[in-house]
Length: 493
Ligand code: NAD
Image (tube, rainbow, N blue to C red):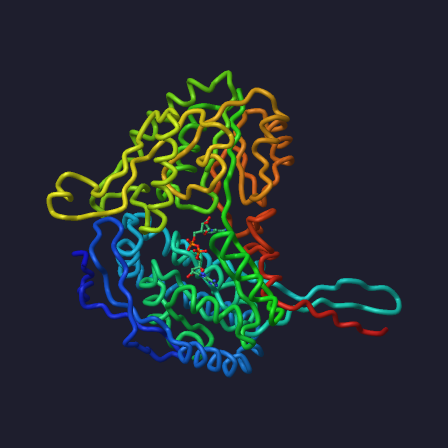
């Protein structure tokens, strides 16, 4: 267990429970997560049983009868209270997050602050859905109104545990749904603690949390009492979720993997671009759905760009053992992902690709940690120069700190190479000629394209994946539409 402690609560003494109808429920069936920074075991956490899940569904269905009658502004007041509650518990939640995810405290705090910002965003009247006139003439007026669906199951990944689950929570709540959150079994603690600490703000049964893995996820996708599944994760599991949801015709939103291309034009401002691309690729050790995952640099500046990128990465993205050192780089978050990234590194080495920095897979962050027996999931930030387009590193989502940098000279050709048949989540373009950047951006087959900035989703903008990267989307006002039925009210004149 880690040694971080809060003012009045020892981390070692924390306990974790499922939260069902505002009561804390434990279980004899538990699992334990490994701290990816040190390899030490964290707390036992109960795995929800099928009975726990049935009880949560029943509690949500009961709560929904009155919750659905609340007004948007009443719900927004409660979102503000949820934000204050998160703020109050920010130190505790970020320390828990740091231990379970391997993030530095800086990044863990950012995860909690992101969740606070989401609550406050949807607490603004202009950011929620409101009735509007769809059509009007002399004989009829037709109003569109938004009706909640029922109970949402939020099935979440591990890379930003709070932001990614809270997005589903705030979207569900502001639209009048109840929600049952299932965090990733790799990062259950902060999410369970947050929902435990939020008890009393919402009516019992409106916001619940159950820990579990694929079995619980499957139950959620099959249960007739769940109206919608909002899923974030891998493409393979997303397809299984959609197939299971079809049996009861659930509404389903899938936010899936990407393999984002970044195109650097010959006239890009190199000082700014190099910093931005390094951040896009190595922030959170590359474990961001819209991380920069393939870089295409114009041949005229290729060598200079690679030289500067290596310098930037060596200076700003280093392995540091201590989570309290402010760093945006850290270990790979769990063993399964570590094995995936290791396989890609070994493939690059085995095929003789040119690794210009990094490439060392480590069991410990430092010699000191190694002597103390601390074993984590570390890979130095790694840059691979010019691997073939059909290499594993370019074709597959690495979701870790290894980046291919390729070269281009023809605009049509680089666009064709950037657009993949099986993914289209995000992309970025860097050029001082904004007309050129926009021309390229509009031809990229991705749900979001960033110009002269690294890929960072914005709460005000719809976020979705083209092709296999998703089905539907979240965020912005448009994202809320998938959490509601749109009902048309026809008034005869
Ligand atoms: P994953 O697909 O392995 O797991 C995601 C969640 O699904 C977990 O809670 C897991 O327990 C659950 N699950 C597993 N099998 C299930 C099943 N059969 N039915 C229902 N639920 C099941 O993904 P992960 O490794 O946790 O997350 C990493 C992936 O998520 C990466 O590919 C990343 O790109 C993607 N991601 C996408 C976005 C986005 O917004 N598009 C955001 C973050 C991460």
